[in-house]
Length: 347
Image (cartoon, rainbow, N blue to C red; front, side, top):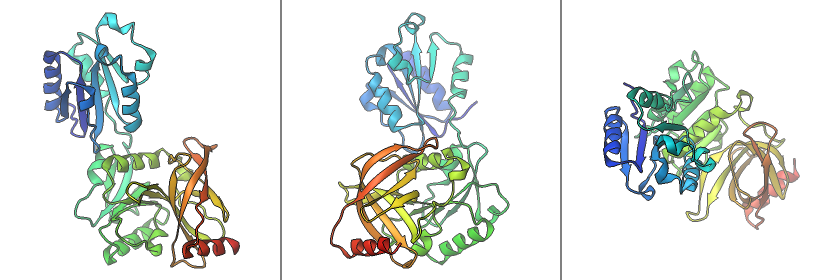
């Protein structure tokens, strides 16, 4: 019997008898199951795949709910249950967000076949090197639920890994030795680092890291970041090229409510001037969104210049699933901004 230990099912709009039968079957498959009385009760799981099973007559009036549900949780799935006569009148707005349709009554074999097609394991056959010094390991279970194989540091040289994920409680000697060993065994393997946000930026460490995320990032965000990485073409899975004089370049969406950055990434720097910069990345930012920018000059590798910026324009790049952004710096009279102006002037 197929197991769904990494999946949350939500049942809505069915009769109590049918809902209970579905709940019992899914529970025996180790899934998390909730029968909803209203769509407002749906609280998606951030550490698992989410699947909504809904009756057509109960959800047909609110297709916008499915649009929001799938936009917020791109790996979610929707199974629509309906009577034979209802199938002909299902609207296009509802069909757009429906992954499977089951006409009632359906045989057990048809139900099992529908479940088998919902298995979301996009990283089947992929290998990820994992290293962890944090109290909790947020990575291994998540990767395995996506179908990836987790390899340890000792097998990095002989494995066909495409990514390494390090979860570090601090930048101690054990962590530095782990980075050094990985670089000796596999100099080109990109590293995604999960670290406490309270740690001061370390330019020596950042020079080895392709992606930087908070250790406490929600699993949903970490899950999507990993999927975004594997969605990139192989040629783009490298440390971003730098402009002359720029050793490192990082951006993060700035959360004004928390007065703190969100997820840092190291995108492809296209151009930079005293007024702003342009970069390319698969990440999505909005026009008018505030960003935090880290820049390190080749002449001053020990110093991070931290700037505030605003996204002024965005457009699709020539490469699939890539976007280009134009960013304007917020000018101020701080030493950081004056250092940046001198940095660019000397390029």
